[in-house]
View (cartoon, rainbow, N blue to C red):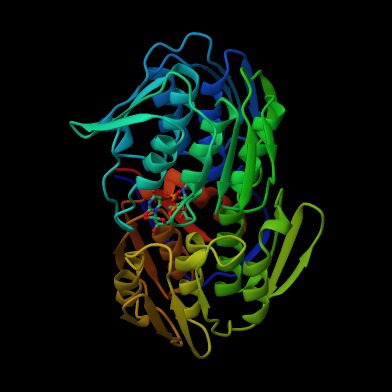
Length: 417
Ligand code: EPU
């Protein structure tokens, strides 16, 4: 298992190029299952989760050609309508094959994902929506077995806002008979990016970017070319790193309009933020000021940025309260940050952070993707050396983070084992 060795206390300056969004790329790759024509994708990030998804899709018979950040998919010979436990257990986003397979082939067998480090994360809303569209669904030996000769459009109101649930039902609805209305739909930019690709493939979708998606089913979708949107979470992670340790960094290939709340919070913390069409510059000359927030669905404060902002709050001037409302167990980084000298206490879904003058390096362990990113930020701010173990979590969602950070002056090194 690789580790990261970080010597803290070095300001960051220079430029970083942002990769394509993981959480847009994953559903978009699954959309390749919806057609027998070629789907050409650009700006696909080079991540472990993308590699896992491509492996899963290839097992189903989807042809994959990959050249750097370009991926060409061809679904003219899909012959296995199954997502096995071995792959689903390593990546919950595998559930995203369920809607497309069922809609195009009338059947799918997908392993139930089970729990994960950040919470129980059921998929009942995916199932409920597909059942409402006429699918017959049984749970057999840990697998969701779904069948439907032809899905039928209907009105679906999900109990809560779910990102991959919306994406699964949206993909299924594109090939259903008649009109599907998805109420309480997720409005995340990644859902919008998927919807834009589906429209380019011939889908009829109205209300893109809103919480009410109206889809007129079509008989067939065709091939298309699409570029994945820049990763707003990767962008915010680097912005947060600079706000925590100080410096002057410009992020290239960023989508400013997807980051409103994060940018406001960074300004509140004292960072100077300037933006252009596809870049964001962050300058931080002083110690950050503590900022309180509550995670919510887009366009609110993203749960995927909670841990990174908490790292900033650890060394900030003053105290802050962070409330996590999306996942029940997303404070796994707190114990590790406290090992670095942070002063965080948890009361239910709220973390109370008293900013300390300094953190001190120590061995810590990454527990999930965003927790890992937050430990990198805390380590960059800490005095001395921090060793972060189990960074395979980081590699799932960040494209060579240590290379990008080294290029702007961080003292960070991957140790292979
Ligand atoms: N939920 C249910 N039933 C369902 C679906 C969701 O109870 O059928 C609950 C979940 O347990 C959770 C809440 O609803 O409490 C929201 O979950 P959601 O379904 O929106 O999460 P997700 O689709 O599984 C995606 C991202 C996550 C991100 C969340 C929230 C992908 C591949 N994953 O997960 O990303 O945190 O939305 O924005 O898009 C990450 O990148 O690190 C990551 C965890």
